[in-house]
Length: 430
Ligand code: NAD
Image (tube, rainbow, N blue to C red):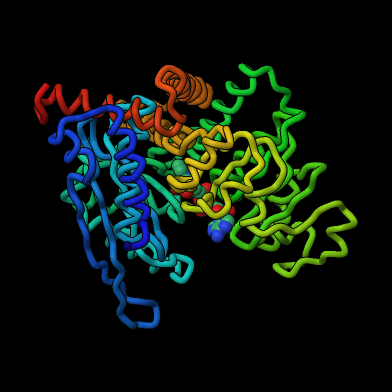
């Protein structure tokens, strides 16, 4: 049997939920595959004069509820299967929080850290030139994802406007504030997940001071979440980045880690010099080095994967000790691991709900671009909280009433909304 890909893993969960929703075969086939797959080879002349090419993708999964929406990832693993899975998750994510978008995703299969600033800008503009006919404010609206930044979004908007001779502030989101961005966008993914955690612990009358949290990933999603939780009184017992992690039962101050990381470039360097840990020094401070694998299995109450996909698997799910998992990363848990976690009564707040704050504030940015307004940070925050909590409560109710995991409930809520739009539009019989 071929080994599962990110997309076949998505299809496994989709098929399990469709089993319960009982769509017609026509509806089912429309939901199982993307509507459009666009591919290109992007040429680049390197600074040394040599020529190279990168594979690039834009997958448009479903637009029944509105324009395709989803980020562009720059990563060596961003192949077609990964981009398809991420596009599908976006279609469900926008539906679960009920914002008027469909789902899409893009990627360039490359390591951007190996490019100069000029090369990075050139390849980003080449992406827009390759896919421009398929993009547009009312067609398909990209955004940042792993390794893509506000600056890259600005170059892409500029390239699109040049090609189309238009003023199109809402053709892309996640832009810098000085060029059509929204206040609150960079913290939105973590803030959205934080609102859900707050609601969950308030409802169960838990005390943040008594809750220990481990976070994998210290970038936009994980790093911002570490600060929010620390400020709210939670004890962050472990954090990590691609180089490794640190653990302290007494708690870690993310501000200190941030400062050190800026100096050395690695979380494992908080109490170490560079990437080689000074174990002696760490022990004195009650701090231990942990690998990214060990972090997932630490004693804690809340585990937050906020880096990569496919990290909680059938192999390690049984050893997870957290009672709640909040998925800020996309696709961190395999379907096999989900089954094990459910048996252990570990509650998983799934990616399509937990990390939907990013696309929600992207929606606010799109609205602001269209109306020419600039919302205050307070308005962004209030609206984000309202939308995230409505989504969360709907998923919680569905899970309870239909005796489903939160992931299956989130899929069910989203798929019903997409199906209703497909019926209303006459794509399938009503
Ligand atoms: P980022 O590039 O800002 O940060 C990624 C973090 O993961 C970094 O700290 C990096 O060092 C770490 N990392 C990389 N490889 C690792 C490894 N092998 N083990 C452990 N850590 C590793 O990216 P981000 O925007 O924070 O995105 C992280 C995840 O959150 C992704 O799955 C992304 O799709 C998802 N997400 C992000 C947003 C957003 O708005 N930023 C929105 C929705 C979902």
